[in-house]
Length: 101
Image (cartoon, rainbow, N blue to C red; front, side, top):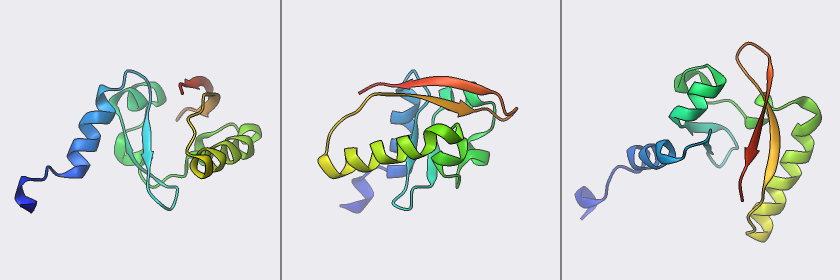
């Protein structure tokens, strides 16, 4: 039976890569464990370099606390959200990124 279940890592990665905007997945510790091709394209670092980072490390410091509160609210209430973030690229420049609900 278990041999018929697709590898969840590769399945999740394929699903993430189908999303046409930068997207990531975090583990239960809040650390990035997967990013999609668009994320790599926009931010300029490899997926391997992004894995293990906390999303707050990549946010504009002024927005990190607000975003964390939004995520916690969303998880507690099982509600979707929309937010616009400023993400630091590998060259330390800030880029705006909108998260759809």
